[in-house]
Image (cartoon, rainbow, N blue to C red; front, side):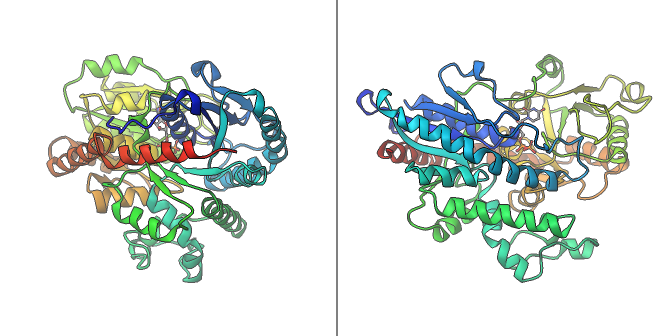
Length: 475
Ligand code: UDP
């Protein structure tokens, strides 16, 4: 990475406290940020919940502080709830409530022991959804920065949420039609009505509104917002955020973080590296990689259609089937494949529980990525120059897919609603031969991502600004 080389010096040591929200898509960017800061001379302390606790042995240089309080609360695991959004939103509120008192005590204790330490605490960087922890830190006199692990556009949507409610876009109607879903959200282009997240009940909408409003306040009252995005990808959105944020809240668009950080993997599931050997034996650009991330789930009929679409396409696939992908199926194991699938797929499909995704996307054999469009997956595909087939499910995924399809034009929408086997096979075939323009755009985006972290690239400059800002901070 290009850098002007701002690094903490021996007589100016600083410790940064980090607190990730305990989901894979939030833990990964937080640990990538930790790796980046550590490589620039900062000492790292990671506060974490017991739920989805990180593996401290992979990060021997960091100090880990478990925050008790979340044991026994309902978790948003895909196989325990038919409505992942509602379960996740409730879980986020519960984590904030449960961790408040223990975090206050642990942080106060850490500050009391501060004179014995060689480094001064600079700041708490917490996930923006851990709004209570950001409040607690400020009350104890610790400067705070918020890390948001989704796009700049998504934060604009958060700030626009009250307006979208006033205008009647939200809560989204339960009955949807393709005409209504395709209507533009005129106040917030390029979103369409169907891209807005729907809550399945009035109570779910109230919870979502609370989380969004408190997460926005947490950012607005912090002393910095860190985003895993880069200027060439979201320049208009970033410019608009810079206009709207208070001047006391500088914005650091330091992405793509996974390219900047020497951090060890923070994967919660064991990544099956055997699939890399299989990829090594496949022709260039011949494999469609299929993964829907750590939280999204699908119905058993969508699962069957996906399987038969894959089997009928004649193409090669690497398919991530994690436990819980189909709620109720598999009992802690991945959902069982339909009878006859192995014979029909004819050895063209390799199935793994969890893949080393960054490595898979960077592999020459991978020609396209069928994805749920989680923000990390989207950024990882952009950086790898891999075109995307989008099957968004929940949260920010519909909005991310809208950008892929209509703004960046490096992907196609495969299924907004139900999956159908014929469509899977047809689109998979298109990715092989008829996708020159998608591939060209994907390669252009890959270059712009590489430029952003190169010498004098926009993200390299932002990283240096962030380092200087953190060096100035002290409790
Ligand atoms: N991931 C992985 N192996 C897999 C699937 C996903 O390591 O088989 C990683 C992926 O690289 C990404 C994260 O899990 O960093 C998923 O985050 P994302 O925001 O894409 O989706 P989420 O899981 O939050 O829905």
